Image (cartoon, rainbow over all chains, first blue to last red; front, side, top):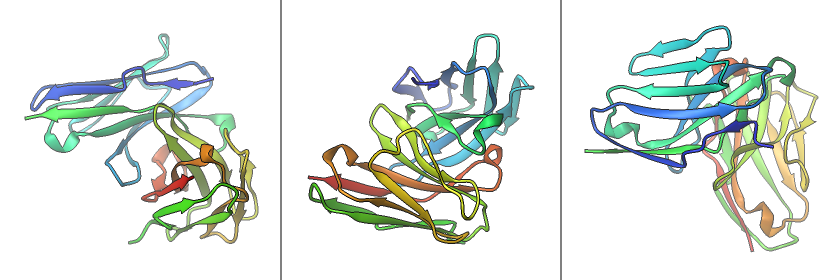
Length: 113
Length: 112
């Protein structure tokens, strides 16, 4: 039972344009959502998070949007840069889940020059 | 600033062999985790330790055991390796999960 789903395995975007990565979830008890970025042969690194009481959080070129009614969140990267090419994972936490995070399958983003 | 250190980085095992993956963190975090990453499956939690002296099962614990040796170290043991355990294993630690885990660089394990 995949509680956090990233339905697009891959995404290709031109440098300078906007990249939009999507994530859907099924558990209405999730209270925090996070995005991680992963380069090959490295561990994932934390990128940005959002509380379930907010609908938007921005950090530089990265913005996360949360639509609770649709159980959907998205990560916008503007403008996209070659160094953004990586695998992106969305993750979610429940209050009852201690500090455990549930991860999606990941989306491989490729930024083309 | 080492963060989370995992050893070894690569390992090949024969079916039925045992091994222990080591993990240590130097950030004084209370919580530590073991995940596995498989193609198309994302990161799945194997075991976690919310604090020193406690461990709990995650989503895919079968075939694994863990030991929280002290606050710094959290090891993962495969008692009798199976080809289905071929994967990349990540250790992570956190103080508060919503501020993000810190992950190690991973152990690529192949069971033949």
